[in-house]
Length: 427
Image 1: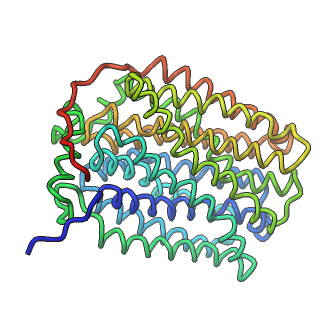
Image 2 (image 1 turned 180 degrees about the horizontal axis):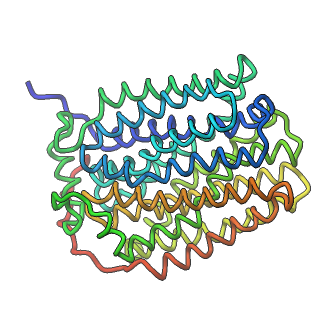
Image 3 (image 1 turned 45 degrees about the vertical axis):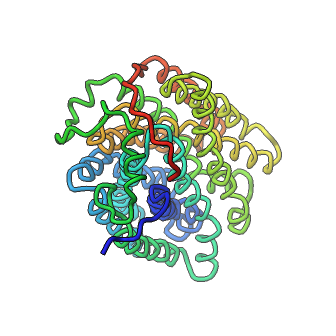
């Protein structure tokens, strides 16, 4: 019997990816929200906490390995393996009794969770025509913002109701539930029984022929030799520390500098991530607006990144304002601006590289981004007791402007062959 087709199935698939990203970022953000309680309970210093967050970044820097696995064994099986691993590791956080044990678990969690970004970009490259990839990337990146947004109230509730250990168990269980949904509903476009012929043709017609898969295993060394890779990777190196700061350090900042208690953190620490959700769609909207006015796809992405970088200058004033609510507002502006530019530069991997290379390239660029987070986090942990948080907020604004310069300098905007026009059908 012929399976029933589902209209606009590609958006259901990216919705499933987004749900996975929500769980992914919820589990990684759990420690940031629980940090004031965990540090007090286990007698961990801010410097030691810097090493703990650094261990996560070391693990997540293995994204090229994750991307390579996803490119070789396939998205469905590979992502299920990684998601099961991060869920179990998250639950094991509840067994930690000292900072070295917690650091070890964070490193393992980072390794498994580093699969999310390559998986999302691989799904976008397979399921969407070029003109929709920006918005599709924005949709799945909403998961990152929403998961981080969900963490403060959910984790605070778990701590108040039980303890901080229960919070990690809860988020890990949610991950296992998502794995079951993934295995049941996800399939690639060439195998999905519910994909209509019309939608399959629509996707294929809107993709660039010069970026189609050549069937070869991706070569890391070949990727490293391309300036387009560095045009993506270096801006991510400079931009990603903003996300690490919002996720791992802002709750401590609000507690130690602004005098917030756990309930106030639950009320306010999620707001920058709400703003980030909006930023996920603002960057693609800018790019689409410019494309309709004759700007090339790559230049449209670069302008969207630049707009985000200019807005990021608001972060420089977080430590300067007296009102804690004004500080929260500026942090919200930072979250919005960061996702405006972050989604844009992440999506470029699907605009510039072949389908069988996308996950590997996204993973390698993610490694550079997380190296930036690692260095920045260690600097905060080592220096915050001496210089405070203000210099770091200023640095976040300046680094993104430098990233915009590198994006314009390194990425080549070569006109691609014009794809065959899509059939005038509604899918």
